[in-house]
Amino acid sequence: MPGGDGLRSWRHASAPFRRCLRLPRGALRRIGQKLRLPHRLRRRPTPRRQKAPYTVDAGGAAALGTSRPRDHVMCENPAMAPPVPLFEFTCHQSVASLEVPLGKPTHALEHLATTCDSGGAYQLNYFWIRNKLRSVSAPNHQLDLVHRRINSLIFPVDLAMRREVNGFIARRSTITNARPHAGARYLQKFDIKDFFINIRTLQVRAALRNIGFGPGAATMLSRLVSCNDRIPLGARTSPRISNLVLMSFDDAMIALADERDLAYTRYADDLSFSAQAMFDVSSEVRAALTSSGFELNASKTKSFKHGQPMFVTGLAISDASRPRLRKRLKSRLRREFYFVERFGLAGHANKIGAHPERTASRLLGQFHYARSVEPEFATRLEAKYPTAFGELIPQRTDDRVERAQRSRREFLTDVENAPQQTLPFYTPTASLPFVPAHRAVE
Image (cartoon, rainbow, N blue to C red; front, side, top):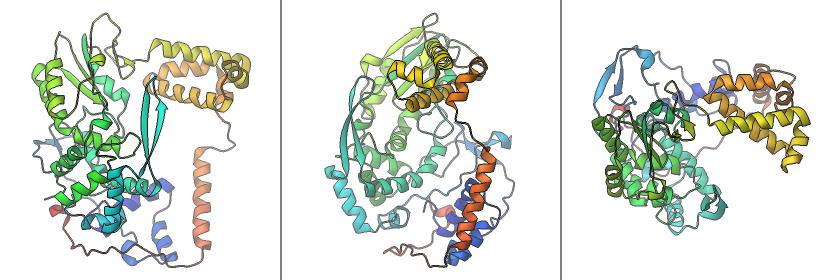
């Protein structure tokens, strides 16, 4: 489990689980009694939190007690403070302590890590992505289950990421990545060459050691998320691991931006700098990437000035109030919705040589993305082509609340009617001493 104490982690995880299923209070306790769960795994009432001033770092991120010192300031307004994490963050020190959170004994983890070292745990596939042939390594079922647990284990690290990092983090997107650059007169964009496959196992191990993991645990985790000594493109852990590896690089770029009075953001391997005056940071970025073990993609290093089309992660930043959609995207949406309005979904899909269901999914996805960037444009589009939206959006006889309530009643009925049984649980081979929460990250 992600937490240092299993009971505490269950108590923290049961509340969001209950809210996700829309269960009433006490439902999890009754389900545990019905299934005869061990008493230590049943939910206990969470004590009321005492109101206290929130502590955030200077960059606006929640401090997780990592090994790196951070400058802390007090947040006067509780509404502006970061949310309290649902899980405790534990920096494991040995391979034996990883048995419980990863759900496998030490010998099984070692065997799986050896298979990852040779690349036998991945299936290699090739796809054309944006006119470029890319190799995608998909992990097998057993390794994918371990990757899910590793993602849960290091999930609280996302809360410590600086606000300038917007890729692969919940509640951050291309919109939040482009927003700091809105209205800038000068822009410089950089790209990291072959981002994922240039991250080595030693870099992952050093990043895990930097946030407090022990030598044994860091080595094992770095081997489990690698393929042939590199981070594979296709594993669910690669995005979060890449952010973890670039934490020191982001700190250096943020310091550079503060020194030169620039705005800096990073979305995966795309770096963006902007300002109101002319600048050039290409040499500093190249030197920082080289020292971090990466290479700058010279063909994608571009500079723009006011009057030229300027885009950051696909959004126009010429408007100082907020990022805007590309004109050609809005024009294409208007054209396609007009054709669906006039000829129907099947007729339009047949005309462009596509499947109707795939065409509907693509148009709805592009429409929802446009609504997240420019809501007024989406509102006008929906009002202008009501027949097209009626055909694209599936009609339901009941609303979302009624479906959720019916699903909840059916779930509780199935639990009440289920025969009583004792569920088997995994028993670790190593005995782990209890570590208090305030000493788990030391």
